[in-house]
Amino acid sequence: MGKAIATMSCVLTTDNATAQATIITPSSTKVKASAFCYFGVLQVQVAGATQGTLAQTTPMVGVIQPTSTKVKSFEGFAVLEGDKTTTPVMCPAVDSASGAAGVIAVTVTIQSAGQVKVKAL
Image (cartoon, rainbow, N blue to C red; front, side, top):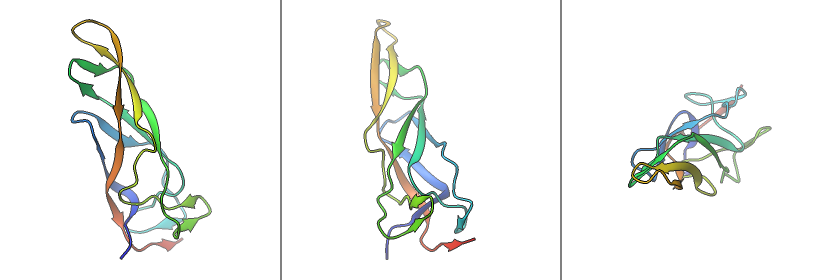
């Protein structure tokens, strides 16, 4: 059985204990499983990252490139469970101890995608 296709109810995880990731790309309105699915490049926003005394100051956007080579719509290939940001999302931060600027790198992964079978609408 293949990997699950990401739907609107998919779960995102980050490699940072405090960072929250949110999908900002609209889902497809042409392909539906239990919920509408994601195709093509998926934009995710990261906020709330911390690392030691560094705290993220501004939400930042990264992209998840789909790895599917078989499931495709006019919007592009399907985004699958396990797909992750191609490069870490670089989040600007400030050090609470010194006030110095810094950067926190956060990788976002689709942990639980949602659906294996889909249908065109």
